[in-house]
Image (cartoon, one colour):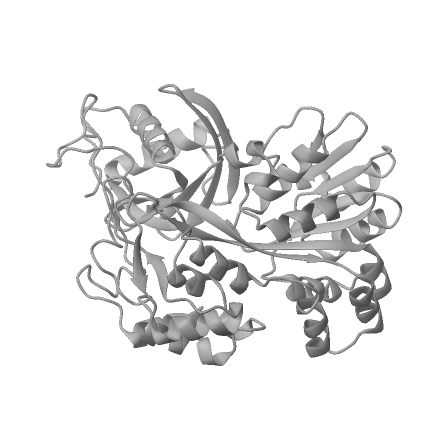
Length: 473
């Protein structure tokens, strides 16, 4: 159920504090404040899924936005331009490190708060869910004295977590480590971290030029966003520096093509790239309630074609008091490419994409699909999660025979059952909802359906719904 606040009795200051603390305790990664005509809707993202959380009346909306802008260091008089801010505080015994973004919309200002969690980064590379083979490749590439290592994936797939984990391992007394970030998400003792500021001309490219005069061993670039940054990063790597960075691409092959599209010279790219780590995040099965089920013909053929294994049973979701919907947390699915001389020669020679694909994926690389299905066999996630995240038609072994239409017809991808739409539970809650006051308990959330304005809670998604959504995306 929706969380309800008694805005007449509770000050806005306490409401904002309660929202941030409660969202953090529930394991949310983001808090969305969406302005609508009738009210402001608050949603929180847990395990990659947005859930409805609360509604704020228009009479309170402006005060709530102003409060968030004040504590995040934004200009409260400016409502026409986007703004960024940060919040670092301890509330109700909870340490909070938040990044705040505000943009103007037709219905008013929309705010999104990103909740930063350093737990995984501090735990080390070995805890990030790499398979044994991929883990060995990562250790080998970060042991190189120079070259570029890229971590790729969409927004919110844990790229920063992976990069910071690698930096923790490389941060030794013998190394001078310098980073250029926007923003600096995690302060690490012993590392020189630079926050870019475009307003005064301190861009990634400008900072990189100066860093090269600081006798660095390792350089971390928060993100390669443009041609200039890409070229400087490549040149830095071939002059004896190990360069770490992130880029928004889906897999190893797309990363190579993206850098070539940024007009990086082929011979420089071929000689500088050492490794590419591509990743996505899948929801993790709850270990308390996961259950075995028989595989259907589609799933059997998929495992046989991709992994060469005969699989009769796999784990699926059930739902219990610990998780609510069968999932608890998320796990990374990886594709790790360690460059060899054959791939370097192919990039330098400019061979066709299909031949480059053959070289890349026949050099001992486990694709995202292979790694995902291996984790299904380990009982860590479900086939539906893997299919939802990975484009099977683009995978080397996926082929169109296992694409979207086939997946929709042969898996539970389209089903929105009660157990899968239940709230991820964090703590025991009262059976009856009540208005929240200073002493009231926390209520449940309502999961928003994938297209809330076109689908009711009781109607399952149809095949056409999924195909239409895939087309739009």
